[in-house]
Image (tube, rainbow over all chains, first blue to last red; front, side):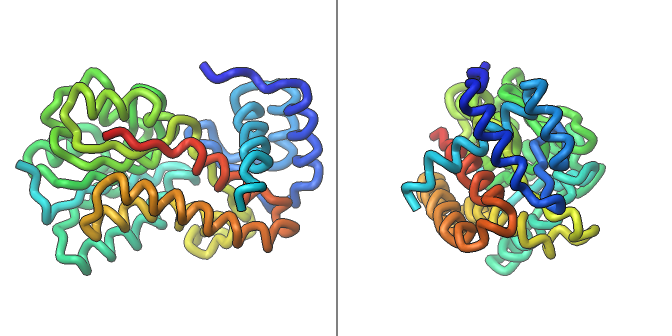
Length: 67
Length: 211
């Protein structure tokens, strides 16, 4: 099982989500498709959907310097 | 002996994500046909387990492109019916190059296929495969400019395999395509707040090759 997101990673993910435009939705495999409002709830719950969204944000930060 | 002129592709389309994968896979089919390959296209309800296993065994395609949902041990077809798992027989995947555009199967099933089922190679993802969508696009996934870079990068694996490249080169080309798409996504960062870039980064990081 992958590690749970840290408090700092959760904060970063929440801030990134705040700025996400309303027309953007995230599809996470078989878990479904999520609007900004729905992702907010999943981040609060720190469930699998929230964790995947947070992992996406961290992956972007890690790889930004490679581009 | 696998049939080098044959390619099998599964295209379930029972939810938004699989609908996107299905529509974006049409360009893979077109390329395979242009290269003279016989394409076994298991679309919609045809992508059920019985069909998949029968065609993989009897038609023996060299390349199998599997779209759908999955977990660490299994991949699914129409309405999430499991079509391949770690318990399955070797004959289904033996000698084949497999690309699984599914969540997580790259973590365990991929290695299992190579180590225990004699697959030549397995390219997949070890975590969730994510897409970013523009909910204003409507029912035409190929018009979705947010999803486009993500599907183009992930389509590079089958494109390379169809050209006759080995799995390692197909994997490397896809990794490069991800990077190329990420550079373009930076230019559009403000339009989607970088979520396309992040999705590309996440999928790129989790794409794995077993051979």
